[in-house]
Length: 339
Ligand code: NAD
Ligand code: UD1
Image 1: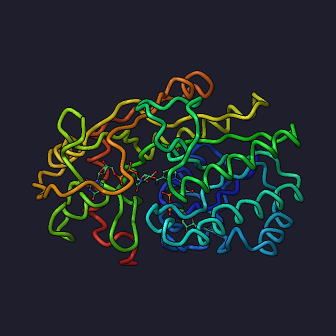
Image 2 (image 1 turned 90 degrees about the horizontal axis):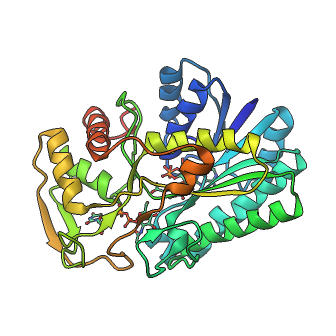
């Protein structure tokens, strides 16, 4: 396998994937506009991998920049993480999301086509399922996103299904992530959200490190064993390994791959708080407040297909997810912003 271009590779999941690609002996280049990440990530990736990581500061919507990148380098595959991911922002600013996530992907795919690059992994999301009326999502579950962010992911999936139909030589994997958490075990890279975190794990860890007073738990009256929401949390390193497995599978199989990447095991908000307290030795103050609009009581992956076709399954449990998140947060209380 030759060189891989990782769009959004300075971000949370992309950066963890870059480490594993480099460890697997692949030459990696990162293309990122740094809209939700920091330049300092690249130095840490080089430190952790002992390799030079080419960094291209560019936007995937910038056709000229992509054309230059593809004409100067021979890439065998693209892993496309670049995109915006905040659900509430997507509801308030839909055009920003359609432009970034959908138009950006179209420009990228067109320029890949012009450069004759036909191997692609796309970051999709469990959000494409919406609220299907079941709690365990198989890949065959109908797709009906309930927010703009999820709609942008479904639109890009649809575009890729049509590209594959028209260009059978394209090798495409659509990976539907569940709830990525955790950090690299070195404590050198992790999730570093700008502003107030939307998601549970970064919020808990910022409370633990003293940056926020307490966690607001969004509802304890759900029909779940302890009343709080159940989610399929997956360690970001397991998720990163899923991308490597997908790259390998694409080399052997010419069909379009669509798989869930999750553990298949749901955990509640209270279970995550308690696992984090155990891992950190810090008590997490919390207050139960009303439900967050748009939240579902429970969902998790049917993870069997990924095991079958990628020979991949998640290995790390919530204790490890919390321990690694804590190491990262404690060592980098302000994320990459201290650099
Ligand atoms: P992230 O924000 O940490 O990483 C995304 C990266 O893409 C950032 O570095 C950002 O600067 C970059 N980027 C955004 N728009 C860009 C553009 N137009 N051009 C170039 N770079 C751009 O997010 P993440 O958590 O690492 O997510 C990566 C991908 O996985 C995203 O597509 C996201 O929608 C998807 N995803 C994430 C989750 C999650 O919970 N984190 C779940 C499901 C799917
Ligand atoms: C959210 C997004 C989803 C996205 C996913 C992963 C919404 C409605 N959904 O899902 O599209 O794919 O993130 O990025 O935003 N919780 C609290 N307090 C908090 C934060 C969260 O109690 O401060 C609870 C939530 O109610 C939920 C659980 O923790 O039960 C997980 O929340 P979160 O991390 O935001 O993930 P999702 O809700 O699954």
